Amino acid sequence: VKRYLRPGDAYLHADVHGAASCILRAKRRRTGGVDGGKTQTLPLSEQALREAGNFTICQSSAWSSRMVTSAWWVEPHQVSKTAPTGEYLTVGSFMIRGKKNYLPPSQLEMGLAVLFRLGDDEAIAGIRT
Image (cartoon, rainbow, N blue to C red; front, side, top):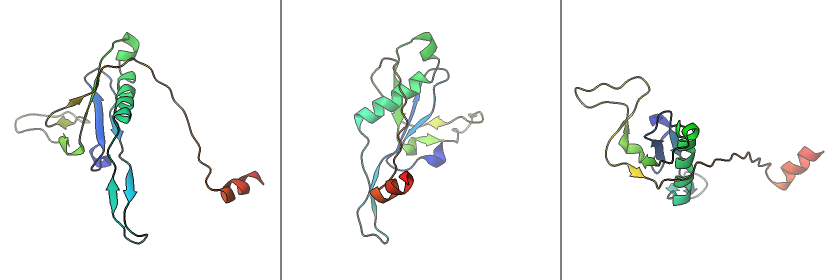
């Protein structure tokens, strides 16, 4: 998980057995020219954080037990694979340092959609023929 996190992203999880680890990727906007321009990280919306937190909870044991609970999110620099001195982390575990930002409890509702983007008009015309 740590290697997929970039500055501006969020790592979401819940304190429920079986909760999924979720990474919410921040959108980036190119601010410079075509060749070598810089990118600007856009802030994550509250709605996106709530929806990703809801997904995390729905993938846990809270779904089958119909338990209403909340997820939390942290910034990428708070996620670590190393334990403090004298402690041990099991394989696949992560240490969260600092304050967890808890999301409000939400109902367990989940939907899934698959969207396809075909491209510009020329690409769409090429597919139809």
